[in-house]
Image (cartoon, one colour):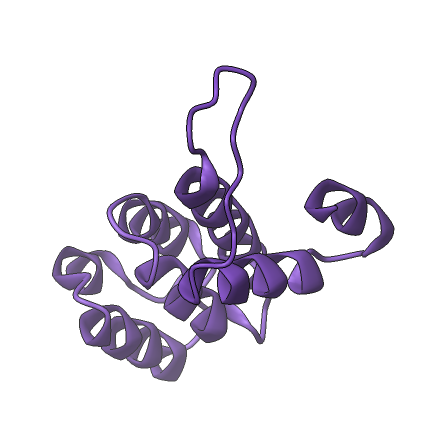
Length: 117
């Protein structure tokens, strides 16, 4: 069902949030062909994908950072990589990005963020 939902929606919001809600309340169990529980892997994959999409958006990057930070250990690593490549055109945005990175424990990113003119 989740796969079908992904196919009919544009940005993954619904599939990501439905999966996360079901996962958080313990009502989601997905087994692969070897009967291995892949529920956590699916949830993390959807959250990482959606968070990355938001982080690359001009005005939604801070929300994307929150999604990635909530998906340790891969999310924070991905956030660091994406933040380092983010185009920053003003000192104000550089300060905001550094503050958001620090808020989510991405301490090394703040030193690398500089405005690019």
